[in-house]
Length: 251
Image 1 (cartoon, helix red, strand yellow):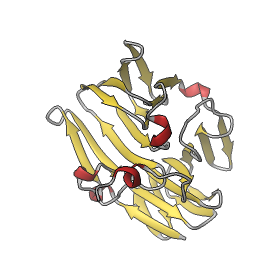
Image 2 (tube, one colour; image 1 turned 90 degrees about the vertical axis):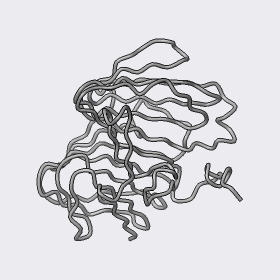
Image 3 (cartoon, rainbow, N blue to C red; image 1 turned 180 degrees about the horizontal axis):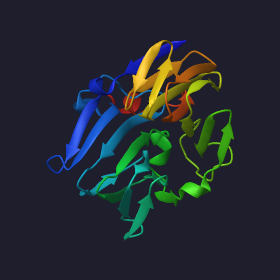
Image 4 (tube, rainbow, N blue to C red; image 1 turned 135 degrees about the horizontal axis):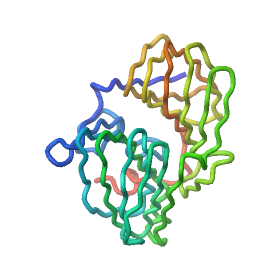
């Protein structure tokens, strides 16, 4: 098993509007200065929050799939395709398949926390297709409960959310105190963000906002020492196409 741990203090950071919105980034842009480059088909991962409420103004995207997950509070989203504003509440998820190009903006209301995650779907194909997007309410995602573990499937079997990026499964997992075993597909990479609580993996104690990448195993042993919430993304270790950094890296 290969395990890489990023404490919150080690992650890249960012901000908007003189600090009205703050970010920690387990996978940042190269200019952000964090230790973790994109891997598999995960290109970017930011946890953004605001104590006062603020607007991330209109800006463009192309090619990538952009997913926003509302962890706390609520936001309002605008995109140039619909030319309208739409609300998203705690537990809701939005995916933008940015294709040949789309612009959007986000109003994060007071007390809101979100993940924004960029997926790399094979830009040689997606840059030439029409952009699309979908919003999903929390109650549209299937939930299973077993022996102290509650799992919401955001992307995977039973979920209505579809992606162009291949091989992605996404789960929000709530753990009661105790030990659990998570199964993985052979050849997958597991990316785990600890949203709340405390967790032990491979004798390493993890706290809120720590991030873990696990590969070369088909299972993960977890021990929650209190009620814990995490986001788990599984993705292919080996891609059948060249990701962004291989296509466009400077020679």
